[in-house]
Length: 297
Length: 343
Image (cartoon, rainbow over the protein chains, first blue to last red):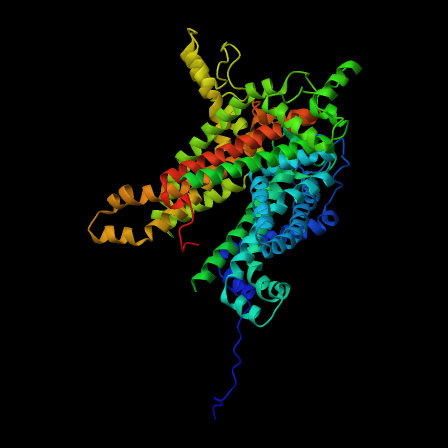
């Protein structure tokens, strides 16, 4: 006999789960997401997996082309540079410098930016207007120019680059959070919980944050691709990571003199940067696409 | 329109105040003595130092120091470059036009290529063409500009030999700088080799301008695509097609005009991005512009130059912002202010 009186519990997925359900259905976004995860794993475990040291060179193995080339050597899969350092190991170490650091940078500036942004969304009047104009000014200065100025104050080096990029990214997060929180505050469900007597911070924590997480994540992927490019550009200009460090931009700048003899020392780091940025942008596109679809339903 | 202008002017005033405050405080943050950072007078004798201190009123409090600093800027005195001991304002006046020229050409290329492509993508929405254009734009948006520049030099200058790889014009041509913008100077000059010089300068600008244009092009593709999709979805387009207008008539008479207006608004916002890319590209192509000068002054720890360069570049970007805002408001009455009931 059929048991047709089963109690079916209705489950409403949280906004974030809804987003993930839509996101999962886009193959391109999932491809980008798996590349992104791969890079994160590489950034954490790359230094343990790398076959050679990134800074010590074998002087009898100088300027070896990649393995698929006629003169290549399989034990140096992607060739070596002018000091006999293995390119594959350098790129793997570089993942934790360029990609890993950009991830950390984004998280730090996200936390600071979201805190300042949501606090400022609660203010109004002169203070709010001042902050608005201040943000406009900061956002009108090119991010790289600002990062360069900060590096000029602090002095070149990878740690100073990290702080510079953190400072440069904070205003974007403040702007996004502020805008999103203000928009949510106008909605009726927030009004309802305010009429129930919830304090602004309670409203912020329980009602608003779950609804704006996805938008902030979309901003975070934009910030991450900007951070990768900024760190690499500063490294390329010689203002970021200093000489022996295998940061992708710095490795590329290092290969410049030998560009014509050993083009792989320039191609490979550039491709690595491109791969990381494309993976990040694909995830970002996926999130924005999913947001749009969710809004339509 | 008057209120709009006043609002923009107050924003402009406020921004200038903040920017000068920022560059003034940089002097305290940079290593070394504040007054030397401010003026760049590293070789000053004690008597000159007293004069400089008097000129910048260092004995009074910080507020008056700032006011004096503003006065100096208003008179066009940005101090001396620490590296070359020449006046920074004259250096900037000779360098800034080269950057403006390069970025305007790049912006022009970006708009010329990006906007039509975006329109095509919007018309073929969700079809193969659309996806193809979007994927290419994603790739162009992600390429690191210094790498792209190097690849362009390797392919087009070294392997194919089509374009020169560095500089603004061949050293054979003697062009007297009048406006600083190379093409106008060439046309103004009375050299018998005017047209050779012109084509040489064109060959020099193509490669760097195209490299700079790649990222803005992709952004214009996206902007043009979204605004065209929005416009094609409106009821006046549906009305036009109900009246029996052909698809081409709708696109050329109604859709393009209305979607272009939305794009113009973003040109100003893209400019800051463009200048950043131009700075790096100038280094790679040895373009004698303000970006390369600024990055070189960082290598030389020329703090006076860094601080003034920041001030001038960001002022320039902000002026462009405001100008595009005005053009947008002049073209689109809806943008001139909040209407009642509009949010």
